[in-house]
Image (cartoon, rainbow, N blue to C red):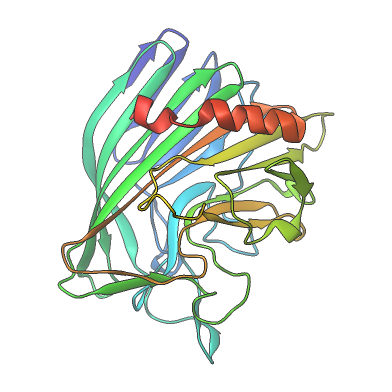
Length: 311
C-alpha cells in the first residue's frame, strides 16, 4: 500500500514496515514486524532516520550492543523481564545473560491518517514475556510533522498491566549501577556522532550531562564524508503527574558512542499494579545543521505540545 500526499508518501510493506518519504527522502522506516532473535528482545523501531536533506541520524544493530536499533521504546528492568535486549543487570551479580528476554509484538494499526505536512498512526501492541505470557497491552501513537526546523517525530505510549501481578519497572541504576538509568524512548546515533555536543538549558557539554534533569535535551553531531552537522532535539512532551514533579532525567552519552534517552525510571522504581497504566509522550525534532544552545532552545520551545496537536 502506498499513500501519496503533497510532499509526503507513506508506504506499507505489509507485515514488515512503514516508510515515510518527503520529496524523495525517506524520513523514517518504522519496522513493526522485526525479525530479531529473542536474545535481542524483538520490538518495533524507527530506522533509518534522516534529516529532510537526507542525512542519516540513526544506527542499526551496532556490534557493541546489537539490540540498539535507531529509536525504540526499550525497557531493561520490567519485573523479572527484559524488554531491552541482551543482558540484564542484577544487584550484587552485575550483568547476566538470563533467559528473560521478552518481546513487544505488533497486533495491528487502529488508524493511519495523513495530510499535506503531517501523518499520524495509532497502533496496538502486546508485551509478551519470555514465558509466552502477555504482561502489558499497549496503545501507541506516533506521527511526523514537517516544519521550519526540519521535521518532528511525535511519540505517545500508554501501557497497561495485564499480568495479574504488580510489576516494578526500574533500571540498572535502581539495581545499584550508577549512571545507568537507561530505559524508555532510546536513540542510538551514527558512529560519526561520537563526541558530539549536548545542549541543555543553555549549557553545552557531553558525558557530564548524564542524569541531568530538564524538559528538553539536544544532541548535535557531525557527519563523515561531508562538511555537515545534524541535530536532534528531544522534548518530554507529556503532562506531569503532579504539579511539583521534577523534569525527567536524561540518559546521554557522547564519548564511547552517541545516545539519548529521556529516562523516567532512571533512579526510581515505579510499581505498576494489575490493571494500572503508565503513559508518556515525547517529540524529537530532526534538523539539518547545528543551531547551538540558543537555537536548540528555540526549537524545543516550538516543539513543545506537538504530540497533543498531532496525535
